[in-house]
Image 1 (tube, one colour):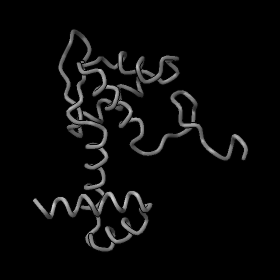
Image 2: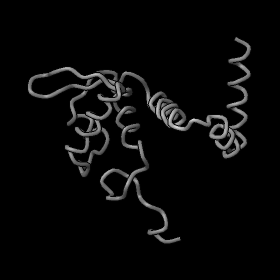
Image 3: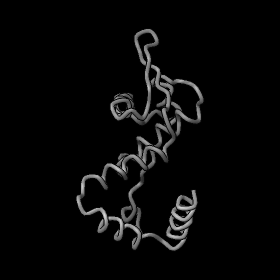
Image 4: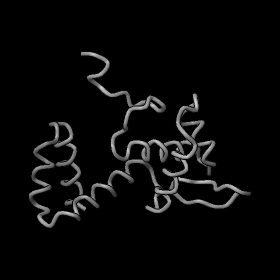
Length: 134
């Protein structure tokens, strides 16, 4: 395997991230901080080398705000952002949105379940059984 076989998705590496990966990382940074952060503080925590551009962080925070995944308030000339929920909640919302876009939910769910590895399938079955007991 060569270095070109697998893209490097580390911040500042120049490779493209998976969809939603940077958003999830930003939300995780905000959750871990436990207090509202400026875009510059988010950038420093995401990428101490500062190879990630400030404008990329601002754009990502703005998109998360539009999705109601983060809150923001003015702090002087800048905004401070705080997580509304954790990264897992953000992924779950994205999954619900994708499912809602397809009218045949049963086919989508069937294919999703059939593509899970055995451990994830077992976890999903346990969660569904637990929900049925409630």
